[in-house]
Image 1 (spheres, rainbow over the protein chains, first blue to last red):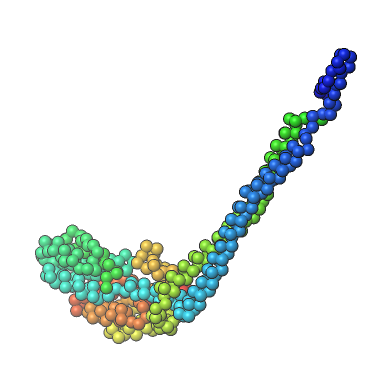
Image 2 (image 1 turned 180 degrees about the vertical axis):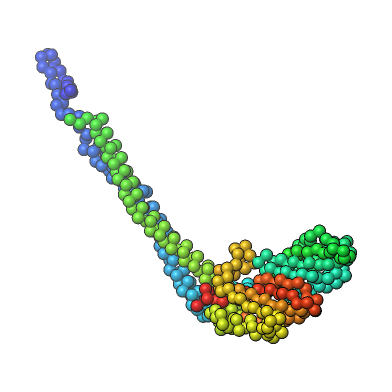
Length: 194
Length: 192
């Protein structure tokens, strides 16, 4: 609604000077310029904080990573040259390692049997049967002894051998009318003993 | 007609639009940067792993004096040959005093497709080598021939491993049967 301003009244009350403001309420030019400045300021601040700063940080980080990458690639080249310089043949090394494993599977069977024979001699016994299996790492030995109670002693002797992991034996049985007992020992052989 | 209230609303809307625009621009730009960073980081990790592995290999093996391949093939021949193996076995039996005659009833059987059980003592090597089993049988009255033959296998330059032995203890008079099986190894499935 237009504003009505009364500026003066005549002395005689006949006339009045009335100023009617017909212009709508609009922003003054100074207020308009201020809003534009504020908007520009917010725009610049937003671009700086939300874009410029993080992009700068990412750029620096990326440059550092690229630099590390280049250095590492160079280091890798040097190590590869060192590897070639030493004439390292991994296939031959692996093959030799496999053969070493193979050598470890060899058992000096005669040595084992000599040990067993000596042990049986200690209890005045005799070996009648021998059976060895590498797949199960077991040595079966059938022993005849006249003294029934010597079997336990023989068992202890076997256990004291460094190549024997464990022992067991059957219940000794009498050989017919003879004064002889017979029992089969099962010896677990340690294949890793030198 | 615009009034003060509407003008203020428009002004604040413009400010919000500016901030929103900045946010969208940020997302678009940083997404590209982040993917580049991820790529380069992954590449760096791969290179670092490669350097570490190669460095370990050089450290572990630089002082190793490996035997020449042909010397290793003396222990484990490159190629399996049945004739060579058979002749070698027979020669060792002869040297141990086990001739081929009606008394000894000597026999040599070769299984070139021998496969060790998965849980056997040979489980660590069965995939690295070709295994060939040789089974021999003979009669003898003394332990000497058994001992000599087993010693020959143990002392041989080529690697032989006794797989099984069965015999009754000979008494020096009566002949007993001896069964010995041993394994020969060949590099056919390993180095070329």
